[in-house]
Length: 365
Image 1 (cartoon, rainbow, N blue to C red):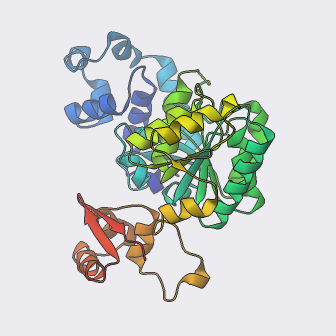
Image 2 (cartoon, rainbow, N blue to C red):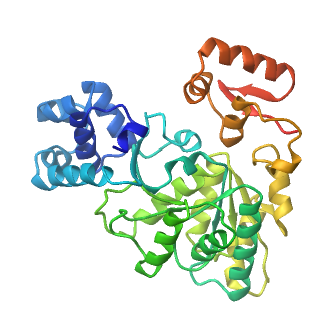
Image 3 (cartoon, rainbow, N blue to C red):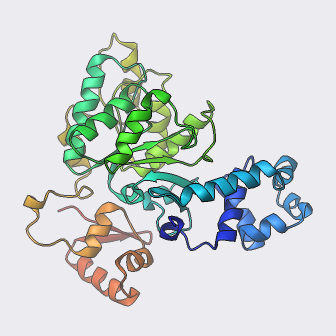
């Protein structure tokens, strides 16, 4: 069962978490408060409504706990997870993407179709207009191909325009690409990209959604899912965007999350370039070629084998993917914590890693 990869949950607790996840107005903070107050999702569901009200939970949410729709949806999700290539990642489980876990509001559950390990690879998000101009589509394809060949996974929203061009270009060069949806994985949107979505999965990529599997593409879902696109990524490249584009939301979220923001300039006479120009005025890095992005992220990307002069230390390999705590490094490397700490000390003395606020980072060079 796929959940064994991502969570130690007993099936009854898993079902309870999936039921909580389907309740209206239940984001991570409320999800966490329920688990902390009652000790588990199972206990939370069996607690009286008065106990939920004392936590400030809306009555509509309390009433929905007992609904057949919520129960049946959770059972359907459990059956979905049983199938090959279909996974559930939980924010408190070891398989949850490390960078995404650092944002202010990481989704409590992530449904993944495809390879979940890809979510912890170094990623660059490429976003832009749904009604992109032909030159912008060409630019998105060129940057996507080059960045994929440089070792980055390309993450986007599977939308029409720039998103689709980026995903397809990565497939052309055999790279990894992730699509973050604004709908449930069983309600894929847009339908025009159904074949593209399947090609991404078949090629080793992944589709990701925080929404229940049968959730439709509501307008409010898309701005919210943008925090996942930026949260998974080391940086966000905006290729072409008007001032009203949702891509600017992704860029703003990236900046708030401490990620790099890149923008490609365009004609001063073209309204579709004004969003990128505004980002540049706000501090985004103006980029004209892929190397500028790679140079700004030096030390994060996986170096091509020909450049590596000696085998990469296993702890460094993990840190090149994402910053980690000592405990996570011990878990993922399957080594005793004391041994990991000793090796980290050696690497720090060699100038190959650094520790900031309790997390270890691979250093450039």
